[in-house]
Image (cartoon, rainbow, N blue to C red):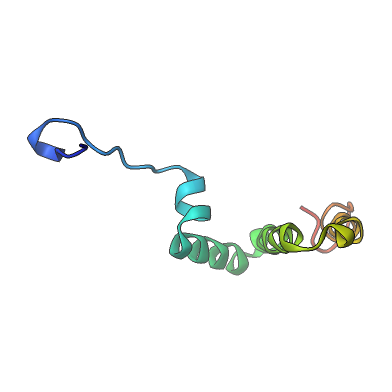
Length: 83
């Protein structure tokens, strides 16, 4: 059993990784995405994150077209949302 804290014994180590706080925790994810959207230099990264999540949910047959759209929108130098 993991218990303890200040009283000794085993303790449950708190996960402070980015993945846990900003991807796996719904409120942390929402807050971080809103931060990205509201920061001028990071808005494209927030949009890319949302589009990558949509890509992961799309059907296999649609992935080629979706990947091409992602490349054109976010990975074309000089584009408005180039990351």
